Length: 125
Image (cartoon, rainbow, N blue to C red; front, side):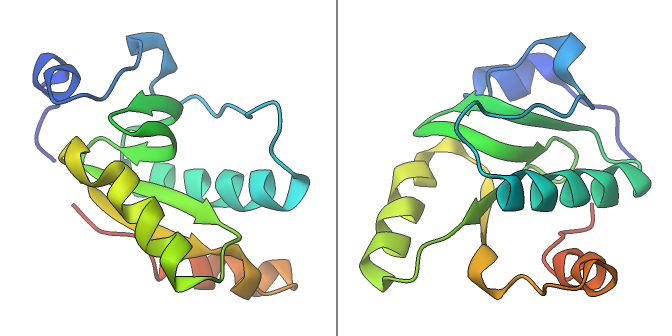
């Protein structure tokens, strides 16, 4: 795995503190289902030895999870409307990261299945 160029990442609009790398944060308004899915995705990425930041500022807003190694932003969403999905993608499109929207409405109820379902969304480095 290539070493991270933190200066370059920050210059590209990913705003985080070094101490926040690999630290799981909860947004004050997020629901438990959202936080559980984010926690599991965080766990999956860390098992892959990826460096991640959660709830960090990026161009367009606040990202759920940014995989610094794969330069990928993961957004856990409860939206069904195609226009709203398109709007969400446009919101983040200029931040230089690949954007993966994960539809939480399709998240399996059984936790043992959730792991495999979320892992299918992960981009390897």
